[in-house]
Amino acid sequence: MTEERALRIDRRSESTIAEIQNWSAPMPARGEVRLRARWSSLNYKDALAVTGKGRILRRFPLNAGVDVSGVIEQSEDPRFQVGDDVLVTGRGLSETRDGGLATTVTVPADSVVHLPSGLSLRQAMEYGTAGFAAGLAISRLLDNGQAPELGAVAVTGATGGVGSFAIAILSRLGYTVHAISRKFDAEDYLKALGATEVIALDALRVGTRPLETERYGGVVDNVGGDLLSRLIRVTAAEGNVASIGMAGGVELNTTVLPFILRGVTLIGVRSAGCPMPRRRDVWTHLAGDWKPVTMDSIPMREITLDEVPGACDEILAGGHIGRFVVRLAD
Ligand SMILES: NC(=O)c1ccc[n+]([C@@H]2O[C@H](COP(=O)([O-])OP(=O)(O)OC[C@H]3O[C@@H](n4cnc5c(N)ncnc54)[C@H](OP(=O)(O)O)[C@@H]3O)[C@@H](O)[C@H]2O)c1
Figure (cartoon, rainbow, N blue to C red):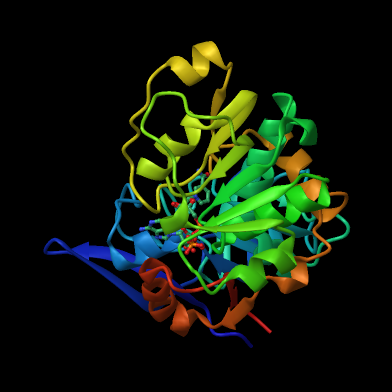
């Protein structure tokens, strides 16, 4: 029988402590389900939470992990039956409630998505919040008229989880994708995913005028800061810029000119709080018509709960490529 455990984060004397503890999730109240977790994954946000380098938890202590997939073992909601395969990403996991890096998890049924056909429980966590955020950004872009004819879509933080999935999905949908990365040795990887051009971050030259020559039909940005400011200046008329991440900074310096003279739209992507109808829709696409043919090219490092803290340090160091999936049960 699997040992009941969780990676629990606490704050003691101004320090963040993340340690494996014995843990069994509470029995579900009305409107909740309890699931036997099989897989989780690590995202940038998890790394910030586990190391204490970012303020992710709104209360302490809580179990870590913004993602989990598993099987319902007890349900107090008629929409879910014992034995259903399900997944949860975001929705307050490891922010306001116990997260998914645990062998059992109790959550409101309103947060839970039935595993769409076409995905295994492991594949759901290979995507995890990173893949879901990429899918959500693309869904928002498409809703706002993004089309291959507008020009290439630039993807920043390209070798990370969100970046890799964004490239792979956009490529599958027929877009020309330009990957922007700090890693000068990642060209083969990014081209295998579907990028037609790979631009080293250091080599990206953009002038300082509020509007520079149009270069990209759209942008999927995981970095923020100066890079996002520069890309907004070169986004083509009617193009969309999806702001997902802040791996490079939270500041944004811009003028209104790209918005009022080119009709550029800046789209905020909030995967954790994404409403359920769009959430289900994006997962259905991820399991089907958006599932990248190049998904197997994205390195998936399978780790155990005990290996999570070390992997979080690696994520924040920024040198890794691809995703970490966490095996929670056999
Ligand atoms: N809004 C949302 O709902 C949502 C959801 C998921 C993630 N996010 C955010 O999106 C970002 C990416 O998440 P992820 O899970 O893909 O993380 P990740 O796997 O760690 O990837 C982040 C990538 O950003 C680049 N990067 C890292 N540090 C950087 C720096 N100092 N300056 C410039 N580039 C840097 C690196 O790519 P290269 O080396 O290739 O440049 C790195 O691989 C994070 O900021 C995360 O918090 C937001």
